[in-house]
Length: 213
Image (tube, rainbow, N blue to C red; front, side):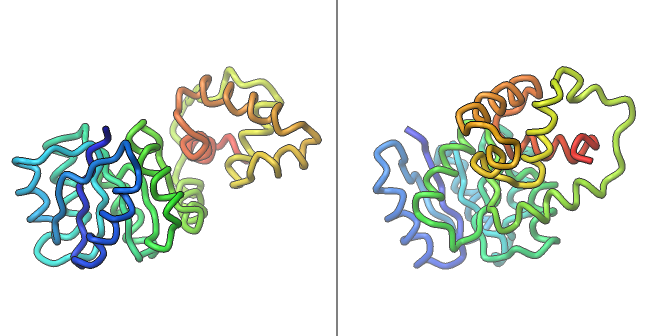
């Protein structure tokens, strides 16, 4: 059972999210808070595997709360769920320890999937803001003497570059004249060789280390 705490300054949002999560048999809402300070106090006597974190809240906002929680209880996964897609919110949240970032207009199915993914150590990022994340990382200075990607063969490098462009399996298959099943197999191999959990992490690595040029 995945224990979830909801933190949002609007009570109606908390109640709506609780109703959505109650439809999943393996999720349990263990508490709700209306700001970061309430959340930190709640964690003193409530358990959580995943926190659904709003950002713009009174007293202590979501970014400040994320930083404090990650310093104190790093094992807790924090999935941002917000209306804000501006760069400063996105990058501040990630820099301070957010494990995933979704916008509130995400579908019920995507939300439930993202909770499971972040619990498993993956990094769900809303497709509407993934481009901003990749663009910022691509513009960052490259680290020296990186051996990232040295074990990838030429076809895997091609597919990794497609991942960095945000292409789906079907789009990669069409572009490289491969079957979708073959693409899936290559991606599994890429994730294993890069020692990452999902395609978002692989794309971030590709851009960070100049493998997607």
